[in-house]
Length: 79
Image 1 (tube, rainbow, N blue to C red):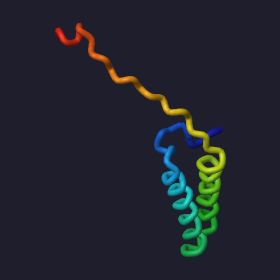
Image 2: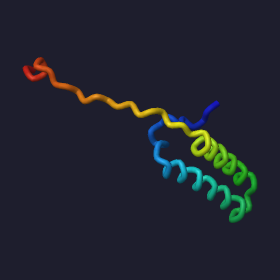
Image 3: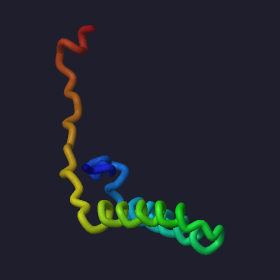
């Protein structure tokens, strides 16, 4: 089961994917070392590991689909 839709265009830039992984990892470390809460640190650490796996290691973007511009016809000009 895939929880992250890697075909979504928001995940195409590398900096977005890195930001997600780094922020989840930082949150996990804060939970472990600042708040001393191992439960939430483990949960967020799992989210960080899963997002790193999906967004960095197995990421294969879908090819871009280019849309052709609409061409005005003579019928459109008469309306």
